[in-house]
Every structure is written in structure tokens, then in C-alpha cells.
Image (cartoon, rainbow, N blue to C red; front, side, top):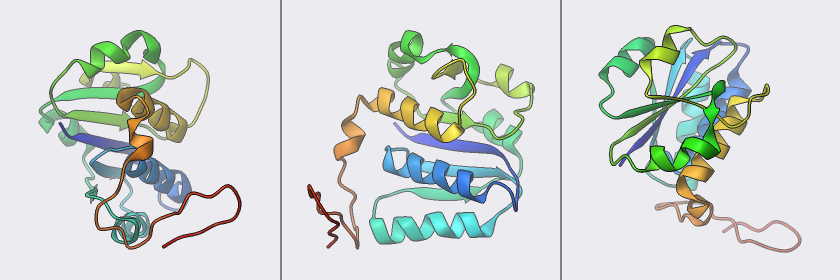
Length: 170
């Protein structure tokens, strides 16, 4: 099973930080691929690729201008994270039962209405305004039941040594 995260509506010059954080969460919380759609931002793409190079793991970072093509061509379960969706606690077990690849769609400022009908699930981590970073992290944590937090990343050049006080890396 592969999990791909599709970030919709990236705006160059406005969304670098939030989009980068979406990519970081996707990688750290066990997704396999991050696809950026919207304005092409090589800075964000390269930044995420450098994280993979330094911190390890098998994580793909790609760009696709045409988000509709990604949704149409995806052969698996499509989950859109939105505050307008059904509560995650009521649907996560049903979602996890699928033995297919997953496409997790996260939006930006304004998600096109068409997205809601192109996916299999519209899921909310809460029906209040919140960030796509929060939605993605909660969704992946519930999906993997916390197991992603102890994941070891292959080929890491840097690793953190957990400590009560201070910072240590090897």
C-alpha cells in the first residue's frame, strides 16, 4: 500500500512555509509521496528533497500542474481532508479496511468544488477552521495508529538521539 499526498493550490510567494510543512509532515508520518500542484515552486520541491537526502527514507517529491489529472488517473482510494467532511473518528476504520493505495488530498486557500465529488471520502478532523498541516498529521496518525512515530528512516545521514535535556544528533 502506498500513500500519496496531493497538495492543491500552492501559491508561489505566499505558501512556501505551509506547503513545506505539509511535505515534512507527509514524510515524517509515513506517506510515500508528496505531489505539489498549483504554482511550480522549485524552492519548496528542492527543500523537501534535501530533507529526504539528509534525514533518510524513501519519499518521492513531485510536481503536477494538473491536479484533475492526478485525481482522475489515481487507481486507489481518494481521501480529501476538509473541515466540511465527515468526522474522522466515525470513518477511519472503514477507510483503513481498503487494501489499495491512498491519495490524500489537502487544499490551500480555496479548494475547487469539483474536488468534493472526485474523491471517495471527504474527511474532517474537526468542523472548525484549521490548517492542512494539522489535518494531515491527525489523519496519518489515526491511520497508522501512532506507529509512524517510532519509524526508522533508512539511509539517514542525520539521526536525533532522544534526550531529556539538550539536543544531540549523530
